Image (cartoon, rainbow, N blue to C red; front, side, top):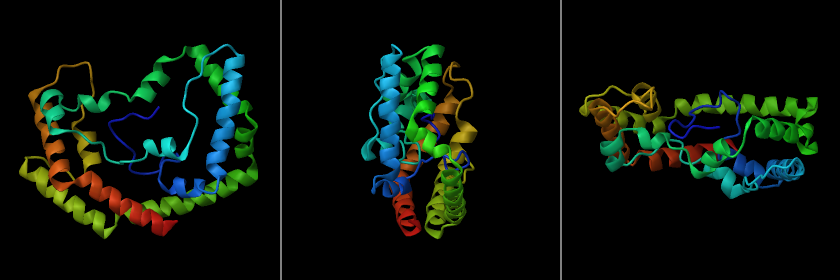
Length: 223
């Protein structure tokens, strides 16, 4: 299950997690595949006696987890609770985490692997094409890290966080350094200060919106 406080900045896990996929889905390929897996899984789970309420995949809900790529935090939440609001699971994640026992998730895995549409993704031909796609995607990610427009936004980020007393190259690295390891521990003033700096710089630079604009432009070019 994806955590909500640090969104991925690369594709090291090989997950389909990009607006690029919305374009690939437009012809019905990937989306139709995910819907077929879902339909089989839902019937299988219900036949096994479990209630299965996950939403059916659509272009809209598949994109909900992709945008924005940077974890947003309001200044008010930062001042009150530090980074803690970023760790609260979304409604869908909360249901997923609490809706079943070990038996539930074991059955879910079995039902998924039994779906013909899932099995089709395990063939040599499919996997070979998938590997070729990811090779191109990894190369795109490396180019994106060096993108001039992204570098300009991050230069402003470094200046903003430096003025607040922090050394940070981008929001993801800021969270990696300052997000609390123990969420059960009390919120400290140091955490509130770091969170406030993070939230204030995101807001003053309109970082989330600007990075997203650059990203979508580059992904369109890549597609």
